[in-house]
Image 1 (cartoon, rainbow over the protein chains, first blue to last red):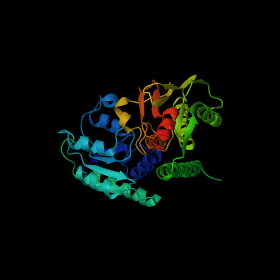
Image 2: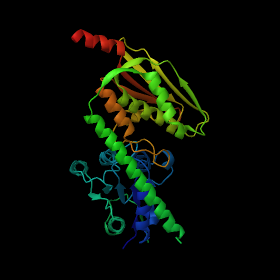
Image 3: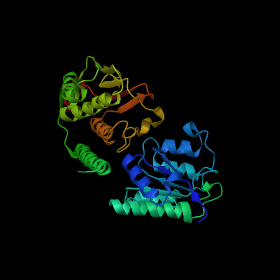
Length: 151
Length: 200
């Protein structure tokens, strides 16, 4: 393994944030996690503006994106990422409670890399997030311009 | 004896169950509006507003709220549905002014058109960014985080559905930190009565 990629989480539900962080902590993946609480904040992070204007402008190795979000929803965030020259290669995983086929189709049409329905069961949820974290932050080779810290 | 972590998990479970209950109630109310028949009659909006404010007593007790209820017209509509609209708008005003002392909530009417009444509910609360104004009335759409202001994101969708079923319009104006004003229009009672008399 050659280092840890930064994970950007876009999730408004504080309970889901806590569960996700708990899951990622088990493999010490939580150190490199940034949590944004709505689509507008996620875009501020990605574009290094607002409260994120002073961060280094590398991209996360993966973005875990909820669909139902205050202000700017997940589809809009995804659309903006894919239509921006500097952001469009960022791997994006939709992590949603929506089983709706139309949400899944729309996500793929907008160019999502993976679509994961949040398992309702606690252990299944934790396992799913752990596997996602390991795959995208450790195993996968992120596109150039991503943050990868030596472990 | 539970340790701290387990206690907190139990608390989380209780809160989640309560939120689920609220969500089901709100969704039922929303779906009911789509199917229920409207029973229209002359409705005294001023009286209705006073009922709504009185019913919100539990939420407003201990709060410093300056109510300003103007003269409201008599409109033509389904009384119980219009009460839901006012309940949603007024309880939102109460909710989003939680950090204000005094909170100022004004309910009044404007004369925009001859055959229509327009009612507004204005507050000096959290407000919202006008760039998201088109999203306010969407189902599950929220503009605030749940730990700032709780809610299911169904109230305004329900209000809009009712107003549309009355042939009216609903809209909102606001600015972040500077409060919000919600307007809805309805047919005027007198006009509606004349119209139904003419078509008889």
